[in-house]
Length: 437
Image (cartoon, rainbow, N blue to C red):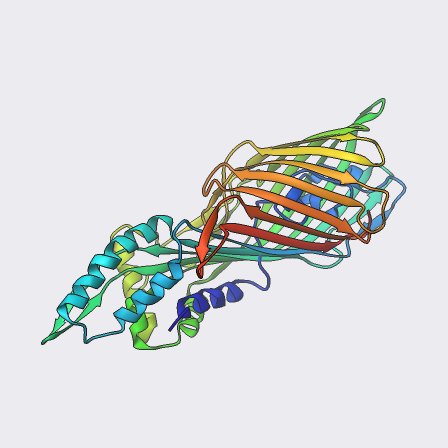
């Protein structure tokens, strides 16, 4: 039984998409450290501002492309220590039907407050992403106009707790406990193909203004699952049950998100404004409303608990994800033209929800040092904070080595106890091989 629930959650992560991603946060590749600041040494940073494609590729270049990645993954957990251990113990007791009256009362006194706290602070979130090799790719037209294409896949998953009181059920002289408490899993899979255009629109002395736009064709697979804790007493394989319910509840929808951007770039500085999803496209989740007919075993238990939660107004049976528009300011100043230090930052002007309902609004500060060195030509340090949702802050470190390979790592400034040892509440890792430096 130990960590059976965790295995089921991880199976749902793998089922949710061909790869993993944290959609729309732009913390992709070197952005883990540098934030939403476009950089000529990082082709994937064109996702931060579509206008950057016009200056990212040299004017004498007619065609250029990425090599590999970035690929990456991360996690975030809530403030309750050893949440999975406590849930596993509760599931063990729910399976028993020969408790004494005192054991049943002890279980109720212990787990009633735990479930309330778990519903407030308990969460496990995993996310990741993968750019398809050679994307993004760029084509320069007439020296001033750049057309580019981007293709990446991804997904994310969040598991939280829906609490309910523990009920004591008597069987002659023995007792059992029961509850409608459940684990609530929301997941998304994404395949995104983007076409963008950027051009220089104004030039004065050594400075230029660039503008760009990008259309992203997004295919989302969105699903919600309820895993009844009491239903696990049937002894069925939780991983198979979650996978079956995911296939029944997932819904795929396609829409187009439009991004626009403008950048003012000089020899030592750059200032940018980006607006993502300016048309605010909608994507539908699979429906959870059902009469539970034809179901059996844990799937039936999950369905009954789900319908009870919907009836009580604790769960939305029909849901649409609206990718609301978000504006971001970015800026950087470089001390030294060819080598030296780039100081940069970015700031989300407004809050935005990701596809599984978590709000984010980031600010970033970073410093990048450039060296005339094949082994480590670039070193990055940064700090960022989500001003919405979890409000976690992150330290970041990244380096480019052998001119093309990049590794970036971020970890939160708060810790949590997992399996009797401390770990950051959140961490992210990314790797890529760039086509140029």
